[in-house]
Length: 253
Image (cartoon, rainbow, N blue to C red; front, side, top):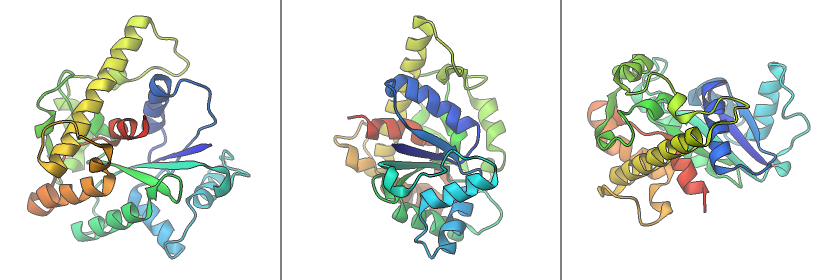
């Protein structure tokens, strides 16, 4: 059993269901649930347990308060892999930039292993980065950056910038049986996104504008360190990067 925990309630689960149809089409017992708040609220809940909180127990209790019983009776020992997907969201006014980065650092140190506490993936600056492109494949994607100030209205920035009016170019509708043409078009777009985001992650870390020679080079902690060194600490910006294509690259054998 694989547990996938998303920050958002609607967008991320819908995107994942398309990914599942493309990359994990065989029947599985994956559980998809949403935390319903940002990574800084997750940090608070984990520290309430002195950093030793069991994410399955935390999610079960949190979902129960919303009347969601999907994790009822599920224990950590029942779950073989745990993946978490959250936004960097460094524009939030609640904390200084230093406090933001300290919290993200600690979360990435805690969630490093999908077979243990869980593995955390970060969107820079947020999930909408997956639409921050011109027509795919976009050779200029490697240059796209968003400032902390711009991220206060990032959804509108992406809406104005993107070649695409919506997420439809990378999504199947729920229960849709797509035509062969549509299936291959969406599959092609996801392949473009994978190459673009993985190459950009490798460029951030190594300075090489190529796909990495091995997957371990672009782990989430190294991406965060590179974002801080090259952008955040210099001018309060981030290189636009989405975690879903990177997750696919890392997960598929």
